[in-house]
Amino acid sequence: MRLRYIPPRMPGTTSQSAGRSLLACEGMSKAEIESILDAAEKYRAMIDRREQSDLLRGKTVVNAFFEHSTRTRTSFEMAAKRLGAMAVNFDPGLSSTAKGETLADTVRTLDAMGVDSMVVRHASGGSAAFVARHVRATVVNAGDGRHEHPTQALLDAMTIRRALGTVEKKRVAIVGDVLHSRVARSNVHTLRALGAEVVLVGPRSMAPTDLKSAISSKIFNDLREGIAGADVIMTLRIQLERHARAQFPGGGEYARLFGITPARLEWAKKDGKVLVMHPGPCNRGVEVSREMLNDERCLMLEQVANGVAVRMAVLARACGAEQ
Ligand code: ASP
Image 1: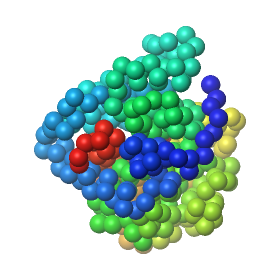
Image 2: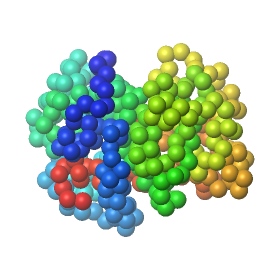
Image 3: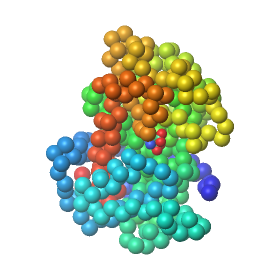
Image 4: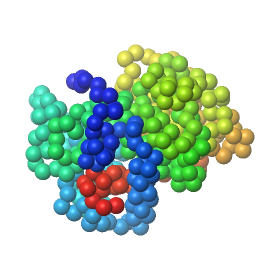
């Protein structure tokens, strides 16, 4: 199903105007982002101590995922449960969606059951904003097509902040399939709001057309050139499911030109002090070499841990609870 694309700056995009929904990072202020990250720090400490709280007792959070997910759905579920909310996973494969029910009717039906916040993932850009117009619950965008994935960018910002002390003035090279990546879009907006310098690196066929002005056209097609001086290399999965036709010769060729290896980190900094991130799931040996995945400079699992903390902060806000 294709939905009409809804530009991100519509009313309801930010928490203030949409009753604490989180639909996109574009337009979020530095203060708003930092308040979520500060709350997430507190929740990260709670997770590390394996503590739970009653903050969201009596609240209901529905995970409405119309597209596949491992970490995001589990992470939202754990976040909701750790705060004491009732977390319900809606499975479109077993629902009337499979019988042809429209997205609007499906989410209205769920909403009528008494939902405080709905976490939505869908293959169409603009779907989270679309859902927000049809339900009373607040809506958290868990990835809408190639548009945005706000909690991923927030957890990435948290990971950088924890590792480097700040995001401000850090050079972040986002490497890979930027064109098809919602992770890249949310990160460009979030990192820039926090004062980072962002550059995009990847094959010409995967270069974005819509982000040029947002990043002042810093787009590189050569890895060595693009990652020079980077403090952080944020790799992206090749989004094969969103490619209408082949965009590059194959995984081997991609790895040769754009794969991140420990040796290549010296292209960024002579001393190799560079952080490597990947949102997962990762094509092992393609975007990042196997050796790099086992290197302590690779923060993939740290990103996952911070993901639960960020989602706790976002759900607490979405349910109107104090943080
Ligand atoms: N898990 C992220 C997303 O859903 C990244 C990816 O799938 O490549 O966008």
